Image 1 (cartoon, rainbow, N blue to C red):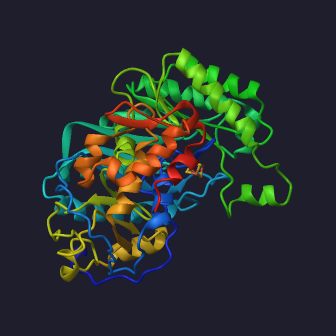
Image 2 (image 1 turned 90 degrees about the vertical axis):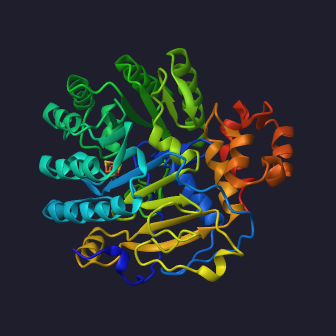
Length: 484
Ligand code: SF4
């Protein structure tokens, strides 16, 4: 096996911005609050709004801001992308594929090889969260899951209390599969239930029915999972508020520790988009979706759930998703697998990292000349999106990285705001912002903060800035104020 670090730069191609957090905990749109993936959907938008795009092997940096505190002191996440599903849902534009069972083994080998490469570069740095997302991680066979998770335990320095999440889909798992995940150290499950209404599940093209979902939840708790998230979608064409409330009641009856609620987005180039374009399906009604969102907020509050993020609620201390919190706090993660994104703050504390943190990337180049004058605030990179191409590259010792970019300070600061303001209670702390970016929040965004506070969309208690209840309903408008 050759070392990926020794490889030459790869060809750049226009890479769809699949997220490192391609998790189902984020598949939709909350009215007014930028949707799709709760984590990376925003990261994607922020990236589109201001980053300097470069070809692979080149980094463009335009910042002259002060260097940031070294990375390494903050939590680190590991996202593992499993791009397989039993069937492709008609609304889904994630980097996932059905019918690729014959390559599961080759994929697992390639993925483990990439993970091994990163384990060596992390050089013992503690990994606080691991997230198996997709896709449907449990589509893989038991041996393949064991191979991946064993490597995680053996090669990475996991925190003693590491959160290890896996997504799962009702309809294909049984108790044996969940028990295996528990034995392999997975301590959090995220299940894409989406609805308890038969007609809605059929419309969404899900492979499960409501009873399957209940059985899967029982199987998961029976296997020892106590930290379970359930995903639901609202704002479906033709969905009534009554049906939505019925789904919510059934979800609350299960008393999961975590709930993720997303409104349906019509993503371009999906079967759903075609149905809407051709009139086969009406477009989702934003006003009805907003009503459903407000209904859900009230219902979940009464049931004892705390809304810690625009689309996410948890019950009890410590049940917020720590991995997704990394994204919302604009912290650091490594994503492995096709289309996975990674994000590290600069200077990067990885073996082989240069001062600016570029040369450690597979196929990356160091731009020593720019480092002194134009330090980046963070870097982001992404793997090739296609599964077969990803496998081929890794198998032949070529880099899977297809693009990389240095984020100027103003872009990184904007992302800290866009992402952090999604955290309903936590918001963005003045002190944390200054520690991250080397300048006070007011100096970076004073006029925008004043405008939004005057409009009643943001509030500040002196220590942190957060959305007001009005701001929560028009999140997109608020977030756009911080994009250069
Ligand atoms: S289960 Fe459906 S929505 Fe989830 S990743 Fe697979 S195709 Fe997409």
